[in-house]
Amino acid sequence: MENLLGQLFFTQQRLLDEVLHTKRAIYLSMNTVALQQLSIPVTRHCNLNCCGCSSFAPLSPPEFLKQDQFASDMERLSSLLNQNLITLYLMGGEPLLHEELPRFFGIARTFFPHSSIKILTNGILLAWQKALFWEEARKHRIVIEITKYPVRLDFSRMEEKLKTENVKYTIHHQDQPKTLRKDPLNPEGDEFIIDAYMRCTSKRLCSELVDGKLYICSTCANIDLFNLYFGAEFHRSDKDFLDIYDTSLTAEDIYRFVASPVPFCRYCRPSITNLSWKTSKRERSEWI
Ligand code: SF4
Ligand code: SF4
Image (cartoon, protein in one colour):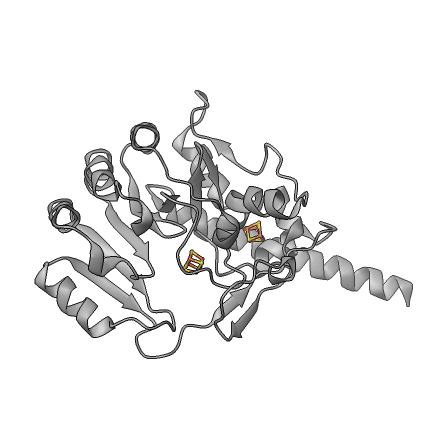
């Protein structure tokens, strides 16, 4: 019996290895000539506070990315990737909380002239944007992606405004209510890394840059907010990110890194989807 279980376990691991190999091969083939996607949080706090937010925004103090750091990161990445980035997301937390956001559009466009550049917003502050925001968005071909949360907002008026200003936009969850997904963490950190990575479908290809460090997902990128707020210790090692200012780094290193699991995956339990949307009470249980 023990022998049979051993063989079953061995076969399961072999299958997982095969699938991982295939998954990596697909990601690598997608990333051989360009990085598919990169997110940069220009703020890490938010004005909506969703329960269990995967960026830990409800736990963040007000934090604004400085223009010169953004410019320096853009210049470095542009040179590393030879401008080959498919989509750049300027996001948060909530990016519209950053008063200098319109200035970031031109910087991003200078260094990534051919990329799709998008801002990802909950839309709450769109109606309050000044003329400069719309001018810069048009000039630098910025796409506005709005997630429609179940909050009181006049989305028809918002759409009229977007059309009047002649900017490209997408509204997600127009027809069905936005639900929540919980990505519970395992404080013991004893999940099988490959299993955790394999079942982690929703965050794949969502590499995120924080403080000059490139992470493969927002959980790993922002876990410091959780650690600080709850005094917890979800440990990140130097294998969990790439320092983009490391002079030996190449585009191939980046392509390989974003297509592979990291040690931090050992903290990730299976996600729970389709939960009703509600606001965060900033309780530890929302993320555990
Ligand atoms: S809108 Fe909700 S999910 Fe998005 S960053 Fe804000 S709190 Fe998080
Ligand atoms: S650490 Fe790994 S398993 Fe966890 S969310 Fe990120 S990519 Fe997915």
